[in-house]
Each structure stands twice: as C-alpha cells, then as structure tokens.
Length: 190
Image (cartoon, rainbow, N blue to C red; front, side, top):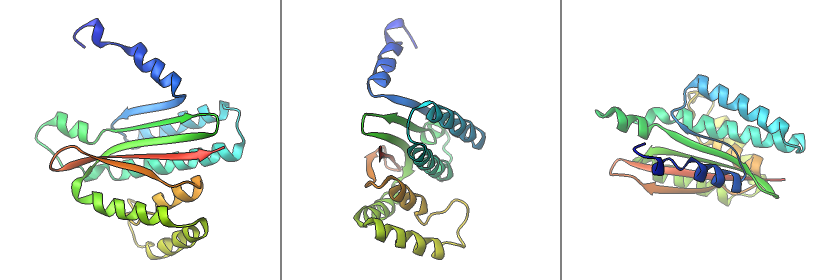
C-alpha cells in the first residue's frame, strides 16, 4: 500500500458486515489450510442459532465446494512469472447468511478449454428434478468408481445441488487467452 487512502479496510469491513458475511478467504489453499478453514467454519456455524440439520447441510456443501477448488487447482500450468502462478492458483470463497438462507460463493481460475465441459455438467444438473438428481448421482457414482481422488465426473456438483435443493448459479469471466474465472453461488434455504 502506497498511502493511507489506498488502505480503506473499513470499506471492506462495512461491506462484509452489510452482506452478513460469516467467513471469507482469498489465497492459495493447501491441505493443511483447508483443514483449518473447515474447523473455523464448523466452530462459527456452531455459534449460530440454527437447526443442526441446516448447519450440517451448509457445512457439507462448503466442504464439497472447497474440495472442488482444491482438487482442481493443479490444472493451473506453471508460468515463468511466480506472481502470475500465485494469482491463477488463488481462490476466493465466502459464507454468508440472510433472513431466509445461507449462501456460499466460490471463485477460482480454470483453463478455458474446461469451460464448455463444466457448463455442460452444471446445465445438465440444473435441469434435473430432485428425484432425477438422486438417480443421476447413483448412476455417476457407479460409473466413476475407478476415478482418482480428484474426481472429474461431477459428483461434487451433483451433491451440492442435491443437498442445497437449489439450482447452481455460476458464471465464467474471461481473464486471458488461457484462463477464465469461474464463480459459483449456492443457496441453502432455512
């Protein structure tokens, strides 16, 4: 920061307060940091006076979201500029609430050639009814038993849609010729 004017931390604080952000994070996620973030989240959710069923649902969806961004970070190719590598493998997430729901927002860079594949998976999931989602989950689980821990079949996305009972809201923003920024919003009604 060059001067005091560029350090408007109070602006960020007020914005988070006004939007009822419970927890937010921006940076590179390691396995240890992921574990710590989930422990902090679990503690924060326990302090919120909410039905245990809803707290578990929110926590489980957040786990799925963070595992997705963590497991797919390695798709970022090594670049010569270390700052570029750090910015491309950096993720952001927020957990917030309003009177009717909790919401989880995640964002991460993905390779442009993955955008159409991911769009197709999400659109297919969003078109299914609750019963169809349940059947599709079982079908994909059966077909993907040989997949690596990284996955790739879309089970996490299906599970998020099933647990939230809502459509997955998403967006891709062009970053450059190689990367896009993938944002996802998941609502969990109370």
